[in-house]
Image (cartoon, helix red, strand yellow):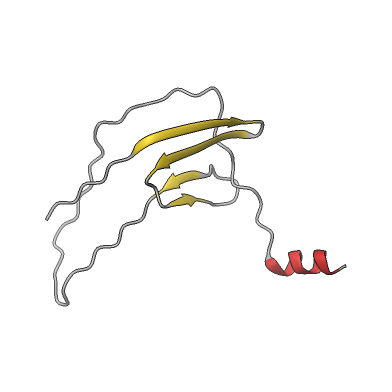
Length: 90
């Protein structure tokens, strides 16, 4: 059983605080405070009950690099809903 995934349509938009990076067809963003906000994808595989998986391998092929003048935007500091509620209730 082989699965292949392709990433196409890279878009880079320049902002004062960094670059916005998007890739067409990606379903989410990697968002962790103080790390770059970058597009990601998640895939779930379903197998019949009792399936034994002996080996999983991943290979990365045909990488195309795009030079950029600055770094991507960092994920901003998260504000908990409690703090936000208290701030707006005043």
